[in-house]
Image (cartoon, rainbow, N blue to C red; front, side, top):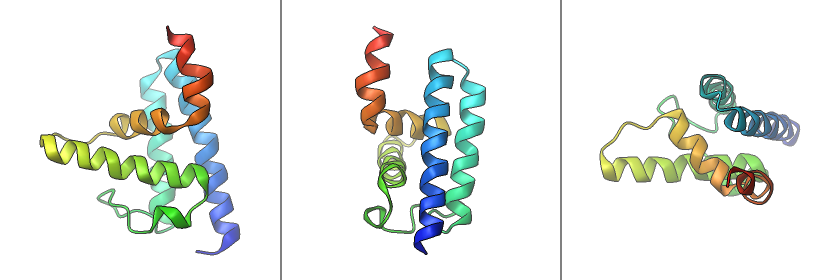
Amino acid sequence: MENQSMELVEKEVENTLYQCIDFNIEENYIAMGQEFAKVLALLQEHGLISPALKVITDPEQCLTETRILLESLQEAQRRHASRRKLLTHRHILNVWLRKNQYFQREVLPGFF
């Protein structure tokens, strides 16, 4: 994938992350799921994931937030496959939020 396209994807992923953090704080899970679904569609459009949400590119070749999202997707799939449960956007998003340093340091402590 060309560099300009990767930067566009990275910016969109980063914007979605911050929107999802805000929705999570507001407990607006429907809007959070809708925004997250849009970013998954973007990743699929750019050939980073398959329609079945399988990662088809090496996450290490992607920019930071996109890499973290792809790794979160892989981790969420491994967890739910071993438990034979249905994988949802919310499961993937929760893994992604836990992997994000901003969320860990700034947002999460405010919940307690």
